[in-house]
Amino acid sequence: MELNPPGLADQALLDKMDQLRELNVQSIELPQLVVLGDYLTGFAFLQAPDAATEDRLRGFKQIISKFTNDALVQIIQEANEVMGIRMTTGDTNPGLCTFSNDTLKIEICGPDEEHFTIIDVPGIFRVSSPPFTTDNDVDLVHNMVQSYMENSRTIILAVLPSNMAEKADPGGVRTMGVLTKPDLVTEVASQKAIKDLVLGKGKQLRLGYCVKAFFDKPVWREIAGSGRCGIGSLKIRLRDLHMSITKKEFPYLKADFAKKLEQRRRELESMGLSRTDQSAQRMYLRRLGSKFQAVTQCALNGYYDSEVLFTETPSLKLITAVTKMNEQFANTFWKSGHRRHTSPHWDDEGEAAHALAGYEVPTQDILLRYPELYNIIETDSYECPKPTAFNNDSIMDHIEKVYQLNRGLELGTFSGSILSATFKEQSEKWEQLVLMHVSRSIGLVHDYVSNLLTCICPDKQVRAQLWETVLVEELRKAYIRAMEQARFLLHIERQGRPSTYNHYFNSEVQKKRRKRIEEITESESFFSKGAEVVPVTSFHNVVNKENTQQVREDILDVLTSYYKVSRKRFVDNVCTQVIGHFLLEGDESPLKIFSSELVMGLKDDELDLIAGEDMETRNQRSTLESDIRDLEAAMKVLRI
Image (cartoon, rainbow, N blue to C red; front, side):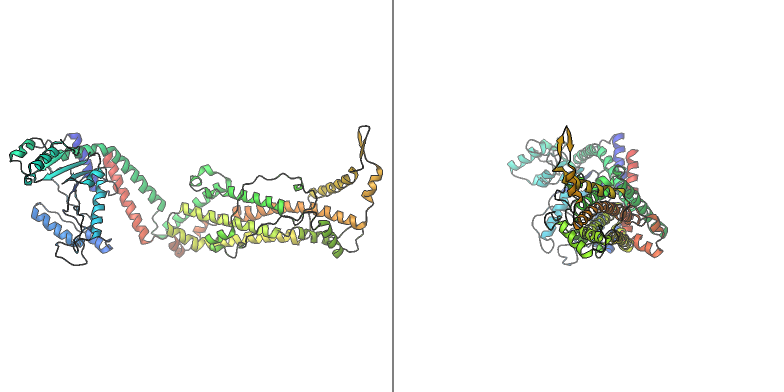
């Protein structure tokens, strides 16, 4: 039977498929034909081949001008020897295997050859035959065959009805059955069943069955002219099916190649430039440093829309987290930072409450993730206790004790040492509150640096070397400076002489005294002729006091007013100096360490240690570059 040649358009499409196969882009499946049946042929490694074996396999290549059966047998035998495959059932060498995932590719070229890629997979068998085959071989072959059949671009040529084909192609749109030697069937019922199967009268695959071999007996003449018998019919039907699937899959092929090319380019881009010399290594690290600083500036300014990293990794929204922690710190300081309440009707000193979102980071968790922060941050958790109520352990009684223990020759006044002593006692919680807040802030900044490095530097080796070799030690120094500044502020505020030039202090003192007068006179006031009148005699209680009582009240007024001024000043200094300057925006802050300036100062041996590529990275880069070249060539073929 003479085969009708494909049209010009079809021929061009098939030529494209041939060109794509020559590029050997293995990550994209092309239309192909898989021969499926009982145990036929096949090759396999049950373990991964070593490097020497891979080189030997890649080097196996032959070109012959005459393709004969004897030549094919010889090639297969030589391939078996290279792959370490048993050639006979009598070969008991334990170093040899029976099946292989490696493929022997035989390419037949000629003007009259069909555009077929035929995969002859190992035949299915269900029972092992030790020592030639094992139970592992059964699973290996089954999985190998299944992987080929599940590809939607594979034509399944079933040499006998196979339930595996039905599972992989339930609609039967890409499965074609082949019956061999039907003349060996002698029973009339069986012969009729085969005829019905071939002619599509029973349950059949949509593509029908082709019969291979003898049609001279009368029982088979009915299907001899059906176009479903003989090699010629099989070739026509396979070619038509192959063309149909190729046309159907062509648009998807283009999309797959484009998607894979973009993916490979992104992977190569994430690796940065090739780092085989010091100049390239320095350039690579400089770009990382510049990227780190650019993202960090956005993180500090809250420009989260300018970088996609903030959407992918919300923990990089640094200034948001810092603001929450500072607000919580200020709120805790305001509500609970003092030892005793200074009024029986303490009303939060007339200040509005902060609306807060809680933000707690236990230092124990920080140290578990980052042990390098030991001996820098506070390790013991601290839960700030509530202030003592005014009527319990009265502050006036406490002031009386301090006054009696520290009074001098002052007449109607008190010495500065009394204010210092009462203020230190009133602010005794400050140290733990501040050091814990700074410790948590250090953990937050350290976590940010680590997370950002992970995002911008996907190379684990570079990231690990950069972190351990350079950054950790410099980060520790920056954190120590921040903790030292916090302790310095504590010393100045609590150990130094109480001092302020803020007019708010005097205003508060006058307000306290006026309020005390109002409380005394309020009970004796009355209304006369529409106005509130206070008897002059009621002021006797204001001015007629014992000297000690007057001094105690003055000490309380000054202490309360100065504590409020000092607290506000101190909280602002901690947040602006320790957190804002030493941890975030100062020239020596931890966020300024990894920069292009640091990279320029690295020695050559440090550069190579940090950014030099190991063999695995070089191989990965080489593979990606090769894939990109092949995929670009494939896209060029698809666009022609």
